[in-house]
Image (tube, one colour):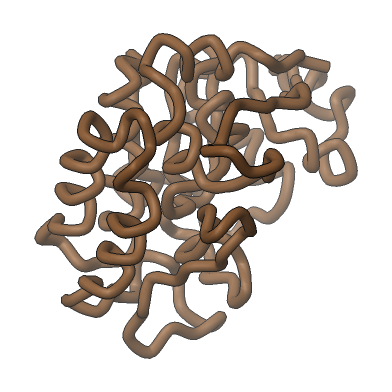
Length: 229
């Protein structure tokens, strides 16, 4: 069984969903500490041909709290309206926007569940069959750190293969995982490009941007543009 474990990011870039597609079981690490200026509650969309940073507004967010101890402000109407205005002429707006509206209207305003739901809904839109779990719903060792914690979680979830984002090459050691009976692989995203209105292409935007300009079938083809190293 192939496993991925990541913190929940709101409408993240395509590489996040490549990892979801590559694994059988995806664990949302909602019990990690909130990272200020990270990607948990923000990302980039296209605005006038340039990247525009958006943020979910949070209530009393702190690096001393876990992600599942923070809440999203009830009303995110302004951000949803910005998305609608800037993408309503995109070729797949009518297909995608109802899903985005549903994401913003999700009743549970706990940050971990709100963002986790957005990931699950996008995966459903893309017809991915990956199983999703929240780490806080399972008996995971909280005293372990770094790769020791990941190895413990792999054993808990019954994983023989653990796939991490490419940035993990500086953090995790393949031999240490191998000695624990786990194959460690890293997902490296290939360069991805698609037509964005008539502007020069802007890479690494939110998955929202990908979906607005690509069909489900085309997006799934883009999701396969990676290698495991």
